[in-house]
Length: 91
Image (cartoon, rainbow, N blue to C red; front, side):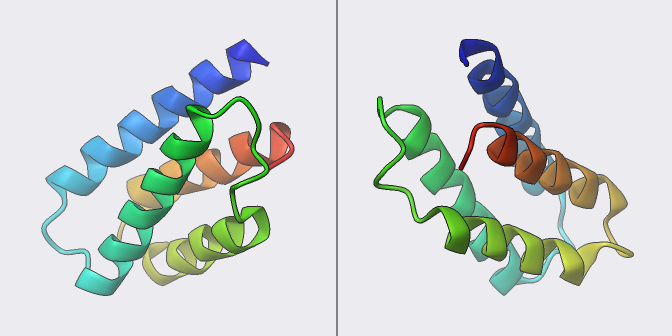
């Protein structure tokens, strides 16, 4: 599990860097992604993931990803990897 957590943390850091560099993401999408990143980071710092709204978090990420799949393929790829990593962790 520690390896999965490390991979997820690396993906989150990549997502944060990509969000910081993009100027063309609308405010709503950016807010949803930033909130999801915050929730994931909080879960990573807990010993148990029970406090995380797993299904809603995954759904938020999927909904956001669909909105910018064509316009921001790099960001879409990072979010997709994040969703996959969360799934592998059982979140």
